[in-house]
Length: 175
Image 1 (cartoon, rainbow, N blue to C red):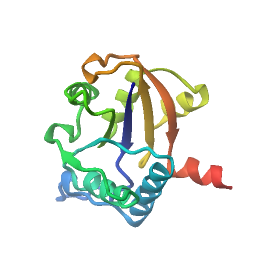
Image 2: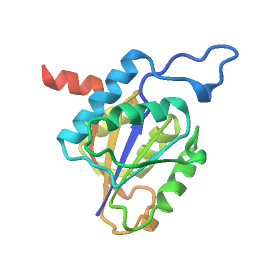
Image 3: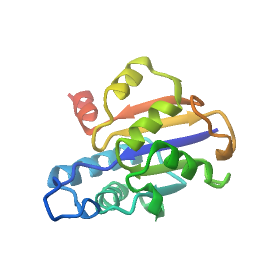
Image 4: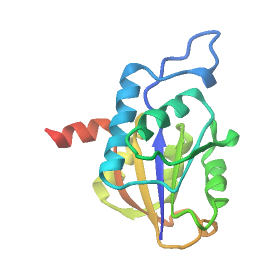
């Protein structure tokens, strides 16, 4: 079995004229949300063997705050083509993952991550799938399980949505 964790970067500052999208950083809410998702992952033993990040400042910072919940934090690697990537580009990055990696985490951007999740999921909790179809919010975490034993076997509609959480759904569940 293989597990894929897709994490959309946390809430970042708005684009401003003259500012590069690549350099946008997290706002305070984004830092708190990323830490909340990291704490959730650590509490539920959702520990990636490998973390692949977009090199954009907001994805790097999202992982920094999420990873603080782990002791030690899983190593992360930046992959240039993960920045503003299409679902097919992210798909190719995943397929290239070594077989020794059982749990892979991708920290990136919409619309690519959202479209990829919808492309890969064939089964799983119906309510969670409906919520995911509507939106993958900032700091949204999608966990997809696959029955195969090698990432090279990845294909559309091959995954089961194990869970889909966001800071908002975690807050709602806590009340």
